[in-house]
Structure formats: C-alpha cells, structure tokens
Amino acid sequence: MAFSVLRILTYVLGIVATAMVPPLCVALCDGDAVSARAFLAPMAAGWTAAVTFWLAARGRPRVFDVRNAFGVVAGVWLAICAFGALPLYLGGAYPSFVDALFESVSGFTTTGASVCGDVEALPRSVNLWRCESHWLGGLGVIALAVALIPLLGIGGFRLIKAEATGPDKAKLTTLIANTAKTLWLVYIAFTAAEAALLWLFGLGPVDAAAHAFSTMGTGGFSTRNASVGAFGIPAVEWVCTAFMLAASLNFAVYYRLLSARFDEVRRDSELRTFVLVVAAAVAAVAWVQRSSPGGAGKTVRDAAFQVASIVSTTGFMTADYQTWLPGAQAVIFLLFFAGGCSGSTAGGVKVVRWTILAKQLVNEFRRILHPHEVFTLTLNGESRREGFVPAAAAFVFMYFALVMVTAGAGALLGGLDVFTAFTAALSMVGNVGPAFGDLGPTANYGALPAALKSFYSFAMLAGRLEIFTVMIFIGRVLQLHRAR
Image (cartoon, rainbow, N blue to C red; front, side, top):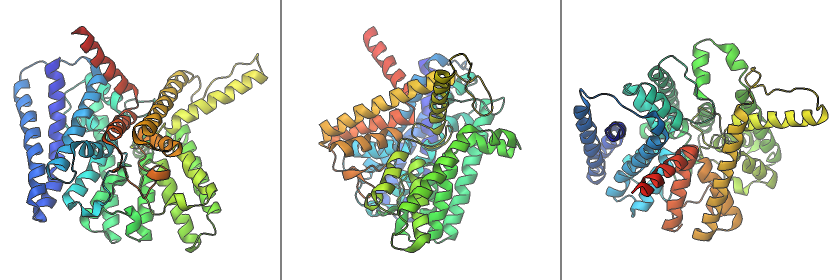
C-alpha cells in the first residue's frame, strides 16, 4: 500500500516537474542563470523520483486501497505545493520558505493571493510559473495524472472524486481515464484560444500565456502590479471576462455540448442559476455605478469584469471596487459567498449547493402551508433528489465553520480588524484572492506574520479540496500517531 501511494506521489511530482519546462525555457532565453538553476534542481529531483518508482513498479501488482483515496489526495496536494515552492525560494524571488509556500499554495489552489508587493520586479520565468501553477491546480493534478497515466483503475475514479469540486461527480464516459482526457482536452483548447486572442489584442507571448493560465485556472496571478487593468486594452478585458465565466461553468457542460446532448444542458439547474446570478449582479453594479467617469461603456465593462472576477474566484482587477459606491460594493461582497459551478476551476461554495438548499427551503415553506401534500426536490429536471440535501447542508456548515475559525486566526494572529479578517477568511477558504479593508484588491498579504500566512495556506488548501478531504487526511494522521 505504501509503495502504491509513493508511486502516485512521484508520478504527480514528475508531471509537475515537466510543467516547469516552459518557465525554464523563459529563464534561459532571458539569460537568467539563477532562475534556471532554481527550476532545474526540483525538475531533476521530480524526474528522478518518478523514473525510479516507474522502474521499481514494473512487474508488481497495481494495488491501491480506495478507502485511503481522500488521504492520498490531500497528501499529494501538500507535496506538490511544497515542491512548487522550491523554484520560488531557491531562486531568491521570495526571502523565506513560508512566503514561497504561501505563494505556491495560493497558486495551485487557484486563490491568487500574493505576498509579493512588486510582481513586475520578479523574473519573467517566476511570473510564468506562478500563473502556470493556477492552470495545473485548476482542473486538478490528480485528474491530469489519471489522464496521462491511466493505470489506477477504479482507484483513479476515487482519487478524482476526492479532488474534484461539487457534490455530483459522475463519470462522463465508461473509462475514468477517458473522462479525464476529455475534460483536459477541452481545458487545453480553451487556454490556447484565450492565449491566442490575448496575443492578437496586444499582449506579449509570455504575458498572453500567463494570463490565459490564470484565467482558465480562475487564479488571478498577473505579471503586472495593477493586474489586467495595467494593459488598458478594453478587448483584453472583455476576453478575460468571457473566459473567466467560461471557466466557472461545469466542464461537463462542454462535453455534453460536444456530444449534442443539448436537452441535458438546457435542464441544468445550476447553469441557469449561475447565468441569472451573473446577469443580475452585472446589471446591479452597472446601474449603481452609472454616473462613474469614463462613460457607459467603461462602466459596463468594469462591472462585468469585476463580477466575473469575483464570482469565478479569479481575483483579477481592472478597478478598485473599494472605491465604488456602497451599493456596488455590497453586490461584490455578496458574490464572495457564491462561487462558480461544480466541476469548474472556480472555488467557493458552488452554485449547485445554494440551488439545492434554496429548493429545499421552498419545499419546507410549501409543507407548512400544505401539510398533507408530498413535495419532492427537482434538480436538472429529475425529481426525488432529496439525497443531495444532507451533503449540501453538511458542506455549507463545515465551510462557514472554517471561515469563522480563519477569521478568528486573522484577528488573533495578524491583528486584522473584524471586517478585513472576515472577508480575508471568505477569500482564503473560497480561493478568491482579494478581500476588503487592508487586504483589498490593491493590497497584498506580504506584511502578515508567518504564523498567519501558514494558517492561511492551510485554509486555501482545505477550501480547494472542499474541506472533507483535508479533514479526513488529518484524521488519518492522528490515527497513525495514536497507533504509535
């Protein structure tokens, strides 16, 4: 069993090491020997470990205890976050390993909260790696491993279920490896299309690739201190807006569209709710900000961009929403509670859970008014879906319990005021990035004490893996400790 877990871990590290090739090439092109060496060292270690276990596994039975899937996934994610921090620390871009780890966790969990006050001073290779980590973590490194190395059988499905977001995690095809490949091919196609459009509209190739990685991963790291707003190109802002929203949808929707299963898409309750929420939020913000300088075009563009950025938990910026009128700020604040769709790269509670709980609430009112009638919960056009309610309620309870604990940590460990601590907690657990107050969209997390950065790293990881995976991992660790 231990051998199988280490084999999975080393294979994933080998994939992450391979993903460091593009930033290494940028470092070599820039003549940046320090950064090149910082990438080469972990790459060599990752490849050596993967090849060693691949050779050792030849001829051995593929044994994997699926009961430990949640613990394995949490352990793998901890490892890749630490592994991804090595180039940031070894190259001197980040002064302490705590800072490098925070940035790496923020990258892989697609949070986008940075401890760096001047990202434009970072080497181009480091900026590309920061953004690429969003892309790797967005759809899931475990899913990528299963797609590239389909050797885990039913264990692979359990691993993907432990990593994926949302309550409904069904296979799209008979083989889980084919499902993973299909989703990743769609993901790659969207990323390539966005990078091409950004390049066409004036961004350099590295900037275009970096922002495509961040957008599709719904992360929010940028190569500019002022984020996407630094470019001042309306077409770029509209492209990012469109792809942030596209990445917020369940990727199974695209598979169903490609398979001409249009009725299933039309009946998708979560998709309809998400579109309604986004449209209402954009309209509300644009209406409140209608007298803003720049005219109606800029007002609508800023409203659409910032709504897409927050609801998708990306965290890009073209305008400082803290300078907006209170009504517009209130809409943005409420979007911190929403999140994207299940099966997307977005964080947060997920729209489907709010949809389930809202439908159940309506049914409870109807039962009060008509106590002798029978009401059933309908989701995606299918009735008798009450089984989703306990899982959704349990998750929402755990989610906001972690938000409260994280808010307390922000106040106690970092001396943050209550509102800043609370919105930062929503941002960390929901993988949003910016918050309000002292940690708003124009600020960064660099001045926080190391203890709080470490706790925030835990909160980001727990939020990305939807809490239960990390809680089960901690329980397994405590069991092993007691056994000793």
